[in-house]
Image 1 (cartoon, one colour):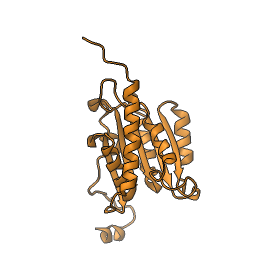
Image 2 (image 1 turned 180 degrees about the horizontal axis):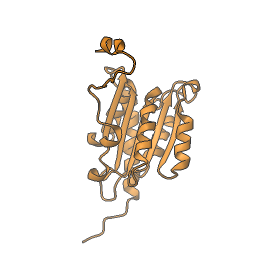
Image 3 (image 1 turned 90 degrees about the vertical axis):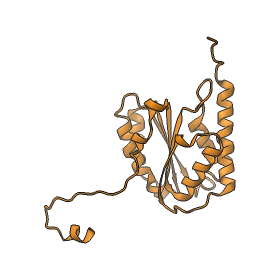
Image 4 (image 1 turned 45 degrees about the vertical axis):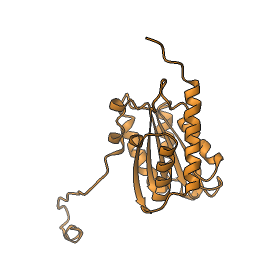
Length: 204
């Protein structure tokens, strides 16, 4: 209990525990499921766990490339930029990141086609030749964003197994149908484009 922990003498051993989500890196079954790309989308301080996950993932030689979309309300709230810049510079081709600042970019990432271009860039070419999706999405932060993006991704053609989530607050937020439709349209268009570019399967 917290009261007992706070009353403990200095130097006393303390064990932390509780109900936790599956760790981000562990939740992306890249070997078992053939995942070739990981897109992580966060709001606010939700980017923090993504930094830790990226650091862990980049220590795994065959872990798929990671694209982080970090969303903030204002430029003053941008955090972990130096750490992400350093990781991207140290691991070119394995980690990319970009920020979306709602007060400067016309609203949150789902608010306009221009903002959703960030998503298009992240998922371009994410369809396997011959069918199937090889991108895994992890959504973390405000429940409004998480619920909208999960619904939009699935509606757009991404299997639910390819979407993992963590919500910090606003858990019961109802997805905005307009935002869901915009996300779904963006994803389905990227899928169709990838399908058109995919080489025809070779006959046996």
